[in-house]
Length: 319
Picture 1: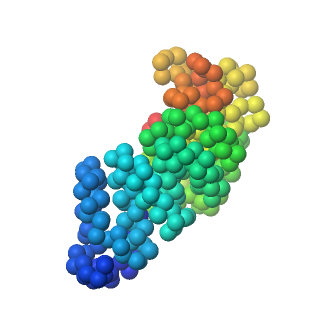
Picture 2: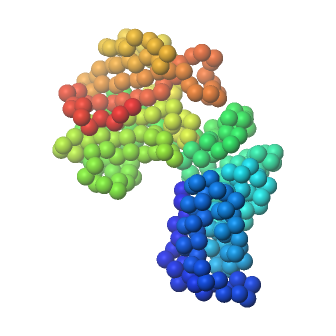
């Protein structure tokens, strides 16, 4: 999540007063150089480029310098310095989630677990749904497997109900027009003409809606494992099935599938047809660390697709 610089910063360029000395170099240009250095893994250079701006009193610049320096320190493994930088960033703008997540990570890596738990609870309480960064920073396996972390996430879980009989999810169902889906789900798209609306946690797809040429919903794809791993959403398929459902549990609830792929190392895919729709469920072994509640060696739901029967396959989301 890149920090956007307000246009007002341009007015500060070439005339920033730092310790009584006028700094001629444009802050935005320096920031761009620092970010490019970080992209190239030259973190020490990124930190040095930002040093002259640490004394600027403009809160937005203070925040940017602290956040960018903190990320560089973090990638260098200098967690105490990163922690100090992100603590300053969070003090300046407490509602900016990315800095809070990094502060959570440095707290945990520095063995201040109580503070890490408190920050995680505050992030979830704020309504944040994207936990991708939390679960991909160094130490994430230990963090994700921590019973206290799991308990906090469970405290703030958001149920995601799929009604397979009605082919309905998030309050919309197959056949609804695009305007209804957008209004009901609050979805946004940079390209209103695109055939697909997607939601992601970080770069990880969590669900997508595919529309036909008449802008009617023809397919929904839910990446169940990404949903579980990177968000507080928890999948439910009626009263009997959750994201933990095994192939045997699904057969017990829905009967024998109409189609089933041969089992493989990747798992197994099963299809059930309903009136006017079908549900396709891919099962497989979860990635480590194994989610709480799953048994060693047991499969879980990895992906769910709801499709209108007789739909064209060209617009479907690739797995």
